[in-house]
Length: 221
Image 1 (cartoon, rainbow, N blue to C red):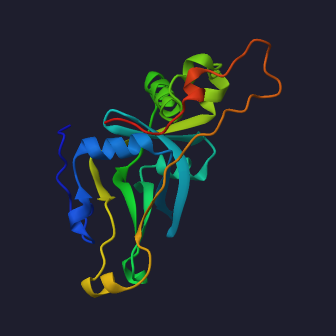
Image 2 (image 1 turned 90 degrees about the horizontal axis):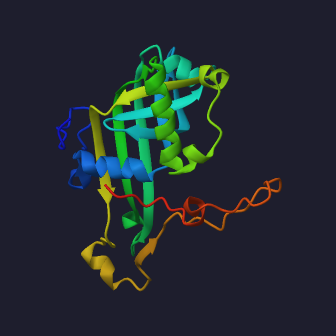
């Protein structure tokens, strides 16, 4: 697919359009750094928004979960879905309450999720999901059994209709408020991994792997 994405009437950013980003590189970098997506869908007139893990492989997002999950059972029937991912980078404290804001990066994907039937694609999607969360872990873990694979559903959402939105930088106050006597600025926020805590029943000689010691969510495009 092309690197740039022409927004549709549904994905064109209307509020603060100067923050809109429609290229795939930026959207994929946000998705690859995120952990959790929120999946919105409607069943019999009732809206649901469900948080879940995800993975990306090429131009497709993959969702997975129990085959008994209401969300996955509903989506595999081909109903429209909206998937969002947001990264919070900072709190922007202006002089006026009205102009307080946040620095963030977000992606919205619209489309129809499709059930993955091909066993090889399903396995590759599960690997992508695992590697998305913790690169290197799949090869060092027990592989899924046939029973576990059957109990797991995987859905593919093509990245055909999407948009990203980014807010960065400092305070934007009304000119008359710059004389107001209060602190203003940005409080940067980031996810930082702590020291790994070994399980009490580790086998002798098992040490913390490098990918756990130096874990970070920062990704490159």
